Length: 404
Ligand code: PLP
Image (cartoon, rainbow, N blue to C red; front, side):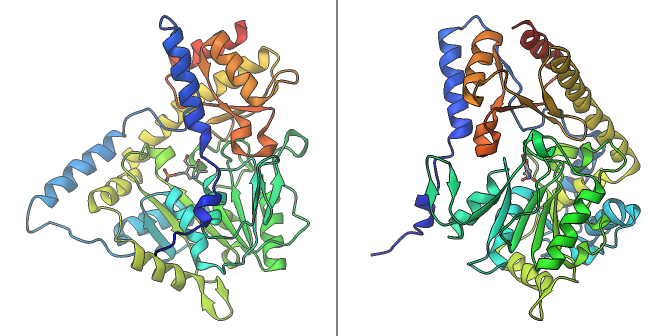
């Protein structure tokens, strides 16, 4: 009789967004006259930039002609895209990343979930708390996290690094030494980020203890402050210890189109084995490449026209973020993030728990956000609002919150 991977049974139900959905549906059914505004979604809402749409059309036409048709893409991605990425995202910022260190993929979600496969089964992982759940869940599936305590909502073999108002939402170096460290800056869900000096501390630490940093920079496009690093490779020594993940989802609206990439520097060598070649082997075995038309669309993001269009798209979301931040601050709420990120992380008022505040906001203001507790124990007492809605809805939601 076959047996299943029992690690999957250890996963607690992914109840955050389903519980939110159920609560919102029940409220809506009981109050059909109320207009609910959703500031909980992490998905973008603006359409694809014009330069991207034109590139898609051109690529579709190429696919319709035998002379210009493209079949399987190269394992690591098309050279035209990897070159555009290396030049624009790294070399233009003084980071030494070469096109052949870039692996094009269909998403930072899949890359962040899959990357653990090239590391030993007994590797110790360290994550920020609160955290983007994929980092932990993918390690649960791989059997690396020990047992789950329902009460405290923590895994016995995971090193949690609390990120709270007290430490400015920047984790402190862990007491126990990890093998893999997941860092995400600008952060989902806290919306906070690190300075280059703060990130350098992590790079130095990883090099000192022989750990790998998996650096998720999916929200890089939202950085507005000077001293915030856009890439971990801005830090000295990062080529020896860090893998960086990027996505076209949040900067260029590709959440439905799907495109991302991972950088594995050739300097990363463990016991004489290059991580780059391991990831290339894994990528080539389990993945047949992002579609040609999508990679051409990705290339258009780096055209002069594309760059201007994505800038204005990000600016529109950031106008919402500013409105949320300023509006809630003026109403006396304690709020964080929202400056280098589309996420605003607010402290729930008084002693209210995250879920209690969720219900309160839904019932009183008809506004939906995301309870911080859903991202980990240190998220309790916080609440996430996102800037991905329309400006009109954002303004109305903030005014409603202020009124209550
Ligand atoms: N990484 C973080 C931190 C995210 O918040 C998200 C999406 O919300 C992703 C990765 C997923 O990116 P992608 O759409 O490229 O899979």
